[in-house]
Amino acid sequence: MCVVCLNIIVQATRSYEHYDIREFVDYHLKIGTSVIYMFDDDSTTPFNSTLHDHINTGAVHYTFIGKSSDRERNLLC
Figure (tube, rainbow, N blue to C red):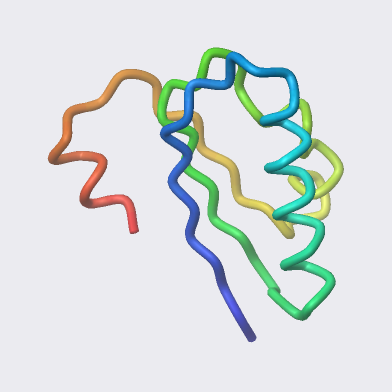
């Protein structure tokens, strides 16, 4: 079992950033990652719509954090 913990702190203002996250998740699931824990740290457009299929199957555990302190960000992973 392989698990990836990903904290997204990118401001998704460019349209291709959702594609990049989707590609990252698809790739890691394909090579054997069992679960990806994704913490979306107040991105402009949340990534859950891009990854809804993986979230629904349980391969991605997605949490939208919203505005949080630096201390909270450091405790995520």
